[in-house]
Amino acid sequence: MGRQGPASRPQRYRAELREDLTKIFDLLRSGAIEARIDRIHPLREAADALRYAESGTVVGKVVIAPGAGREG
Image 1 (cartoon, rainbow, N blue to C red):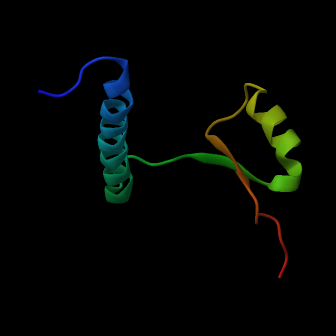
Image 2 (image 1 turned 120 degrees about the horizontal axis):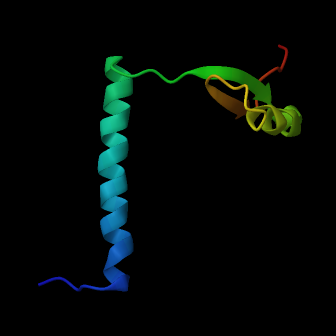
């Protein structure tokens, strides 16, 4: 019989999270659900991106990408 109590919880939660994420990624891959991206901001504009995300006008996700907006 496995240990019960606080020490056993993190492992169980990690397993449940892994299972849930696997299901979500399978749905994304199959096209059953779609991630909506409203805007992609370069890292140097992170403060602007966060202000926009909190503005209440966002329709999808606001992504902060380190390489976004680089030329060449």
